[in-house]
Structure formats: C-alpha cells, structure tokens
Image (cartoon, rainbow, N blue to C red):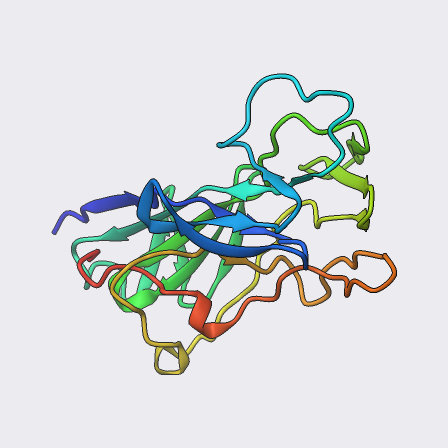
Length: 217
C-alpha cells in the first residue's frame, strides 16, 4: 500500500527566549494566536515590524519567532509506528536536525506524526543597542542586547534536538488546536542581568502547549 503524507503549517508564530518582562496576550487580529506584551517596552518581531528604527528609540525588545509545521502519513500501518521525514524513518520520540533549517520530533509514532520548528529564530532589524554575530560552526547568529533601563538580554541562539519519551502512553494528551507559542530551547535559559528584575527566559509550562489537531492523521 502506498504511503500518503499530509502537511499542516501552523499559522501562529512561536516565540523562544521570551524575556521575563514579557507575557503573551491574545492577538487582536487572530483569535487563535497570541502576541508578546512587554508592558512599557515595545516588542518587535520579524512579522510585526518593518522599516528603519529611529536612533532615539530605546524601549524596543526584539523577540525571535519560529515557524512550526506538522506532517503525518495517512497509512498508519505502513512504517510500524515510526515517522517518515524526507525518506528517512525516525522512531517514536526521536528528535533530529533538518540541516540548519528545522528541528523535528516524532510526536506520535503510531500515527507517523512529527513536528518541525525552524532552528533559527527570525528577528526584525535590531535597535542600536543590540548586536548580531555569527559563530563558526553554528547555524544561527548570536544576538545580544543591552536594553536601557532593563539590562542585558542574551536570547538562546538556536533550537537543539530534544527527544521525547519512547513510550507513547507517557506523552501528554494532545489538545484539539495547535498553538506551540512558547518553546524552551534548553534546560538552562539565558539570564537577563539587571537590578530588581529576575532574569531568564520564559519557561514552558504544560498548560501553555496545546498540541495539534486530532484531525491531522
């Protein structure tokens, strides 16, 4: 039997290394998605800011965004509880690099369901108090900002493969709609150093991930 594949692209952007001064709020233009709210600071992302930044603008917080897509096979019995990606087979819970493009994970082997998230966060034009540097041997540039009145912000530069449990019964129940809005890059998020403001990224919590649509099979 021929194995058929289907693909679903999440219309909502995902955010990594969300600063401690920021939270997510409903997107007024799309009720399915959320956008950053940083109080008196103005968050800028790759999809909401264009043009030239005025040199006297000092309250901008650049936040990296990621695209997310899912894939699955329609013939669930074709590969014996494994995921198929670019003609390669991955076991339940496996996580892998798709070159420098994405980090993918086999979420549900029995359904052949996998999720891929862009490896590098996308940033808009950076304000003058931020720097971007390439590191030899690394896929993504390193961003560092010294935000006036806030302090140093060193967001993690790229996603790394993170395996899931190999036992499908130990995975969390997937909710009906996919909104992976906050993603944790590693167990030790970068720290924001400034007096009186706790540092670090915005840690992921189970109730902040809604999974994927049960109709995606």
